[in-house]
Length: 342
Image (cartoon, rainbow, N blue to C red):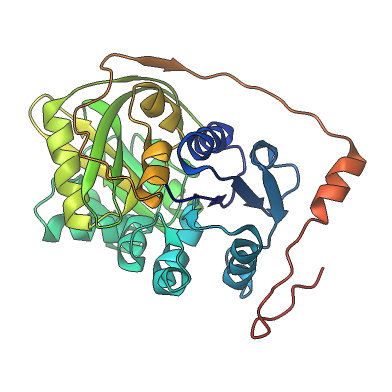
């Protein structure tokens, strides 16, 4: 069985995800987990076997620096975790593949569609996927609206600057306040986040709907798994039309008759611990795939009705430990790559 070393970028607060990959590599990959972040006070950094400080994903040296880490740590599987870097990795897939590294990320095109809520709406309209009516701020037809409606940033995450508005005066206020605003119809019904995992050929391996009971900072704080056939079929259709690779989470609503798409995030969700606990161990399956183990489709194979109730944990470090850890930056190994300067 092939040794698998995993690099998890933008570790931040994703402690359960890092733990899950650590368990996976120790069980199946005989390897290690390397974490990166730009902030030494990101708690998940310290749950890997080793960690590095890196610049923002928009830095021109970001990809070369990660290549350097992969060289130094013999990484052969990369797990991007934040929206900003997904199109960057999608654009550089061939670059990593040339050195034997798989990146669990969808194509640049797919990531750009998902990162742009208006492009997601346009994609749905073009592909026959039910979704709420959505308008850019300059195109809002106030006469047709039925309140409440949502005002959202066209590019955003974590429910930041998302507001439910009750009338036209509120709407005009928030259209001025929210950057790159768009207006989306409110949909009744039960809200689901559906965790999806596809293999590196875009074959759906698992689809797990989670009913969202309590949301905190855009992340499901309490939820329960549901074997909801209509939601699962809908998520599979969206996944296949978007040609997802690796993980994604699909947010949708079921009104008792139809399922409608709210948004897609082609990465691991904050509620992934519930899906893993229900028996759909996405990190383990990705590690096994990289180790050369065939994973059959696991559609519908998870525990129904399993609830999650999240709570806070803390870790502690002295200032001197943080400063020492902050200096743990990689050297760029190839002569063709620029040196990273503190």
